[in-house]
Image 1: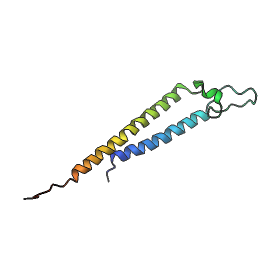
Image 2: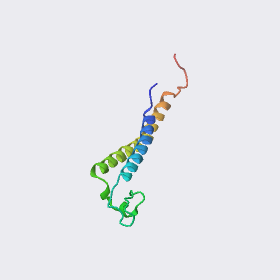
Image 3: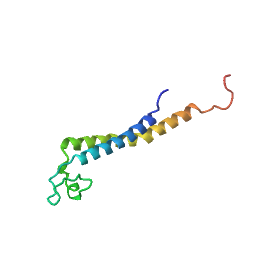
Image 4: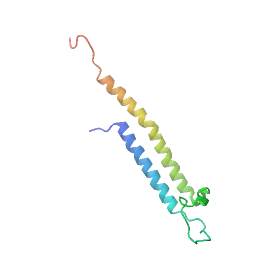
Length: 104
């Protein structure tokens, strides 16, 4: 059975959101800023507002990875309703009945 384009876009949107979230969490938990002098521990940016305002903890490769994931997800979000609308329109044209004499 052939998958519809809107179904593929929907799967890509959900997958893109999950992949972006996982990548973000992995980047945040692997962040290693200067340790806190009071406790001696390094906290990920998710829990430390001091470094969350500073993007030095993220490498350029990680930043580009997040940008690419986000752009692909946004493109799929925009394409999903367009593909669904085009499919709905094609189905309506295929199922259109012609009134009057048929087959004569």
